[in-house]
Image (cartoon, rainbow, N blue to C red; front, side, top):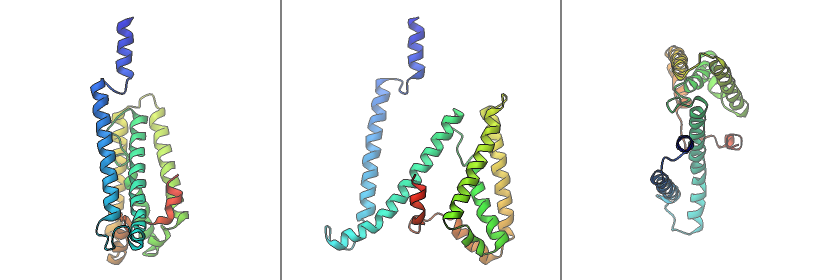
Length: 209
């Protein structure tokens, strides 16, 4: 009975030992201090105004948006990855592996492919943002409802299905991109490239929740 209790305690505990817990806590503190230091560096680096002056704080406030965008992206990426790990009980499966990144690229590429350069404008705005969110959530729901409800489901099947879907969507995206006019391709490339300094801050009130 004692051995069973000990085994259960070991297998259900987050930390294997007190040393493991101590290392995790030290790592967390170091990373938190590094994050605070980098944040301070972003707000103050290469600021031409004297420290503490009104101009200094005005420039620092304009950089807060950059810090906020970085925080939102980092948090969203972390939560999504951990959610996938939790649902699948596997640390390999990520949104990118299962084709969600390829789906996003396909949506934007298809808009430019069928509508021309105007398509890049169509995919911007709050309505388009929510449409893409709903589409990707629906894709995830259909995919996981099928994969997780089958008695034959396992991580290997999930990985294979995700890789096949991702490769198929990426191939279709590449095909459409090769058929685009060079000017339209430039517009699409600029649309798909993430740029923190030119982030669409009007999405933040909707993205943060």
